[in-house]
Image (tube, rainbow, N blue to C red; front, side, top):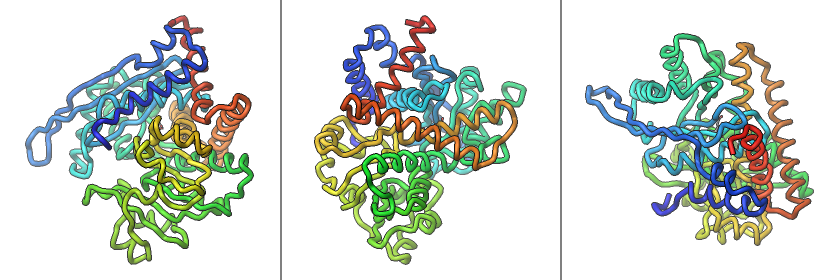
Length: 427
Ligand code: GLU
C-alpha cells in the first residue's frame, strides 16, 4: 500500500458524493461522515521469551442507530486508525444495504501474527478484550474475524469477555468455531455471498456463468470460498494472486486450463500464502503480483486489501472484463472508479458484494443469543435470499436512475441509516 493513500479519505469522498446527490441535510451529513466513537489503546503482552511488548489496538464504532455495532478485528502490521475508521464506516453501509438490524464498527491491532506464537496471539486477543470489554456486548458491539484473524481468536475473545462479565455470552462475538457457538456456513459465507451477487449480475447481463473466466486477487478466506462457489457455477478461474509473507511481495499463479480451487487451497497457509514450489509442481506458472488484474478474463474478483485497483493500474484492465465483484473492502480508489464508470464495467461494490460475511454473522448472533443452532442448508438458503434481494434492490435503482452500482448501493444504505438517526431524534 502506498504511504500516501488514505482509505478514510476514500470512504468520506464516496459518502460526500452521494450525500450531495441525495441532498442529505447538513447535520445528518456531518454526523454520518465520521465515527460516533473511537477507542485507541495499548496492549502490553508478555512474550514467550519473558519480555513485554506493547501493541497498539483500536475499535471504531461508526454508527449504531440501526442496531449493535458490528464488524471485524484486523491484524495487520500497517494498520492505522484511518484504515479502521474507513472500514467501520463501510460496515455501517454494508449492514444497511443488506437490511440487517446492525450498525458498523471495526477493530484492529497493529501486529503481524506470522511472527507471534499461538500463546502470544492468545494473550494479545485477551489483552484487546480487557481494554474494550465495557464497550462490547451482544447488544452493544459485536466483533468478528477479518484480515489475518480467525475462529480461534474469536473464541479467546469470547472467553475473556465471559470471564470478565461473569456469564455466558456467546452472542458477544461472531465467527466462532462451529460447536463453540459458531454458525455453520460462516466460514464460507463471505466468498459464497460474493458469487451469489455475481450470479445475479451475470443473469442481468445475459451471460451464462459456465462460459466465463475469472481472475482473483487474494486467496484467504474470501478468495478461497469465492473460487469454490464460482467453480460450482461452472466458471473457469485462470489466475489467482496472493501475498507471499516470506518474500514480502505478491505473485500471480496462472493456469490457462483453469485453477482447481480445492487443490490450490490445499497448498495455502492459514494466512492465504500459496506455496510456490508445490504450485509449480501442480503445473502453475508464477507471474508478477499485478498480473491478475491484466488477464484477458470476463470477471475480476479483488479479494485482498484496499487500494488495489487504482488510477495508475485501472488502464491495464483487459477490454474483455465485464464485471468486477469486490470481495475485499475498499479495493477500488475513486480515481479507478472514474475509469471503470467510463468503460461501463459492471461493478458489484464491496459493501454489497462482500456482505455475506456479516449477514451470516447476524445469523450466528441470533443463534448464539437463543443458544439454538440451525442446519447449514437453512443458513445458506437464508444467506442467498438476503444477498439476492439486496443485489436486486441496488441494481434496479441503478437502472431506474442511471446510477453507477456503487452510488446506487450508497443511496439505499445512507437513506436507511439517515432515517434511523432522524427517527431516533439524534439529529
Ligand atoms: N470482517 C467482515 C467484513 O468486513 C465480517 C464482519 C462481521 O462479520 O461482523 O465484512
